[in-house]
Image (cartoon, rainbow, N blue to C red; front, side, top):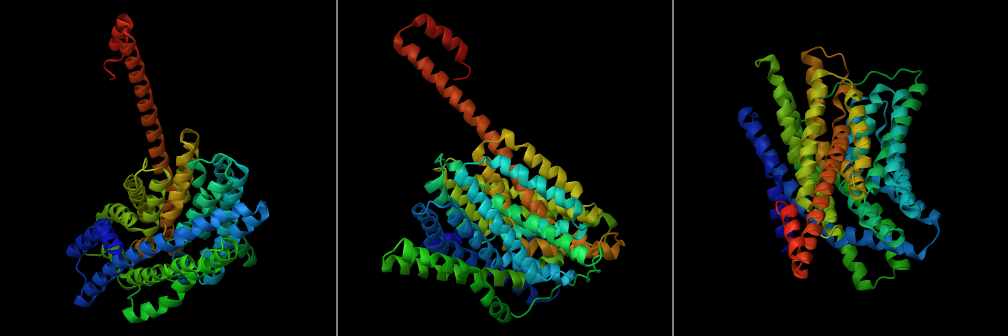
Amino acid sequence: MRLLKTIKETFYSSIPLAVIIITCLCFFPIQGIDNYIKIIIGYASVVIGQSLFLVGLESSILPIGHMVGSSFSKYNKVFFVLSFGFVFGLLATVAEPAISVLARQINGILPIINSTVFIWITGFGIGVGVAIALYRMLKNISIKIIFAVLYALVFILVIFSPEEFISIAFDGSGATTGDVSVPFILALGIGISATFSKNKTNEDSFGIIGISSVGPIITVLLYGVILKAVNGGVLPNENEYVMKTGGALGEIITGNLLDVALAVLPIVLISVPFLIFILKLPKKEFIKLIVGVIPVYVGLLIFLSGIDYGFEYVSQYIGKVFFDSSRPENFKYLLLIVGFILGAAITVSEPAVTVLGDQIEEITNGHIKKNTIRLTLAIGIGVASLLAILKILTEINILWFLVPLYVISVALMPFTPKLFVGLAYDSGGVTGGALTSAFLTPLTLSIASQVAVSSGGTMSVLTNGFGIISFISVMPIIAVQILGIVYDVCSKKASKMEETFEELQYYVSSGNVKSTKTRRRKYGKKQ
């Protein structure tokens, strides 16, 4: 029954994405009935796979994360906690499907960037980021100071890193925190916060994803500096971006078997020693948790295979069809509208976003509804997609967009409640999941390729095409902080009105008629 309920909720949340795809295909039909069947199978696989994945998370990964985080109460050594955080962050990222997808896309255009090396470099960055986030919890350091320092370091490195690495550094950051690592890291943070935090407040539970996401930006930028120096200050020219035609469904599933196993296996290998030797779980409960990993594996396999089989092809097709020579020159700017709708639609379909919304609603005792967070993120990602496509069409350097956006995100922190600061940066980290990477990145690469061909673009496909996840990572930070400021203002007004009402009640009950009339005249309109 729980699976059927989850399938129903997932289907409803994915309707906007289906509508925009169907609309585009109605106006720009694809040749061949086989391609339509491919898209339908891909869509069904995404819905069913995501549902299985979420059900498995609730019965296995999330409880394990809470238990592992809480088990640290048996150890008072900071080094042990930080070492575990680093190792898990590294291994979880190396096995993350979204970063594997991105690494293959980057290597296909710029072969000098080895996909395996790129994955391990981003994994190292996440590991360091997780350790910093845990240290902040243990030492009760202000999250606002941590973010200000880390992003100051990021933009110092941007000055020295090759232009080609700026977009992929931010993209790599967004792709590292995906469908497997996000639920576990969030649960780990909640467990550690409840055990070690001096304040014992909900605010300390958020921010671990946001802080962790800065690590890969720094390590990839450093990788770019080193690679440029090794090659005498010049990077080799990139290959042309080639649109994929997909393959047989059976081949895709077989090809994903090992990748998905590697995505889930590190969490199991790290967690099992804690469950057996430290928590000493009863055999029956231990088996129940481990068995719960099976639907996580199967669901993720179906989900990713559906994306590879149908969604990636249609996203590249949409990016190409708007540049048809038979259409007016300005017709391509309709992609801005399509990008906004696609970004918003994909956000509400992203598994990691769904998990984050559930976690937030649970930890705030329902004061912040998951649908409120999902709608806020959908609007933010819609704007992010629009800006990314605008950057590609106009061939404006990405820094003209990213620097002001990150300055705004940092400038909002002093006015944002502490809970929403961590929540905002966590939101920016989870929105670049597997669905986003596999659908929007091929779309933007396809657009950049068409810009380079049709208008003789001055920027390379690598420099101009990547960056969509960069925008997707920063816009939710701004959107959620604005939500937090509005929420704080409304809460203060509500508290003030409640105090006024209680004061009025006191004078009424005390029988002080003169004072009561005075206060009624003063506060009557507010009541």
